Image 1: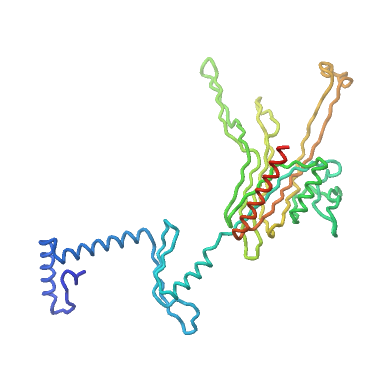
Image 2: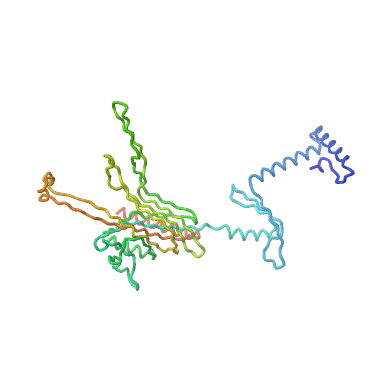
Length: 368
């Protein structure tokens, strides 16, 4: 810039003369804004402002290198790569050979993020005398269909256990139990999650619960003030998948199934109770392999009475006109999780078509 205005010399002996020329040049430019020096100064200033603004909007990376004798594909010239965040693009300035190297590298990096379609089935299994110790989720070795020894009370436990198998076989097991009237599908959500990203499904309802009560007695008419908070009850599923290069899926699973229980008396007031079953675990399975989490058993008791009106309320003789039934019910909560790794766009299309087929079949069934 000094050379444009003053044509400053690098010699020490010309220092005084250079300073004189600089002052003269500046004076001449300020006196005549249409002079050549003034126009050049204005152009340089505008160029500097544009460069400064461009540097704020994007980041520029300069890479230098030399091609070796073997020609292994290293860079040999100066390269300017500018990132355009607005359009999600890269602007590359390089010689053709370097450009091809960079293009190959970008094609390897810029790929479709891996995703996982996670299918979950949450079911409540009724435990009667044949399954009162819990269902043992095992199969008999050898060819053939599912063995009826699936319901083996002698092997059942009430502990927390895992089993891994094929998705089709577990579907057959649930269908078998459904024919016996022993299964209740609580929820069957499916969620598509990106690699290392949490996916959450919340199918619940909010129940108002009195958190505190205060009575104002200073006036003639006492006032009762109640603070209300809400509790979520239902099915809450949170899954974070991690996919490795071999196709194994490691999942961080957090599952909560809760529901409203009977009301309890506390201090003369009735408050709702809640039953909650929670599973927090990390597990690793293959693509399209099903993991079964079971052993979460809940026991409930109920008393039912029936009989002739009024007569059934008379002490002693009420048993002659009615009956009372006490029932103990046990249910085991099982969770089936099946991950499907999605790598390409073809996998996405296949999943979409399968989902459309399931929805179409369900609509036909409900329309009958």
